[in-house]
Length: 113
Image 1 (spheres, helix red, strand yellow):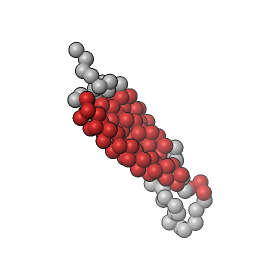
Image 2 (spheres, rainbow, N blue to C red; image 1 turned 90 degrees about the vertical axis):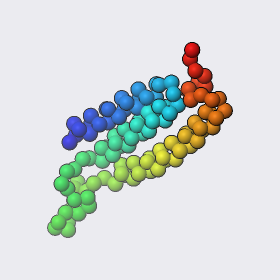
Image 3 (cartoon, rainbow, N blue to C red; image 1 turned 45 degrees about the horizontal axis):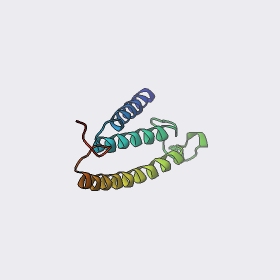
Image 4 (cartoon, rainbow, N blue to C red; image 1 turned 135 degrees about the horizontal axis):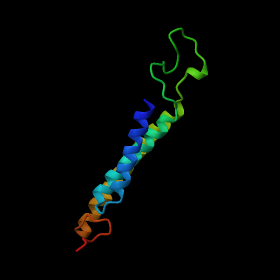
């Protein structure tokens, strides 16, 4: 489970960095989204991966703090998802305005010849 999650974070990070370095603005937006997903997975994984464990209390009704899932990374990721969505929407609006003004979707605003 940990290996799969680490590979997913690595693939998302690598793909995001590669897309951020591309010359088109749409690829930049997708790359930033992939990077934010990778960071969210990383933060979520910091709250300990527990397979088959109850989220709060076990079946007997009593539990120790070591058996609980950590709610702080979950709250941070939920907040980051909302902020990332708003930032992506704002970036897309700016992208459409820049494309309308310059007529190009290159990052620097002009096509290479």
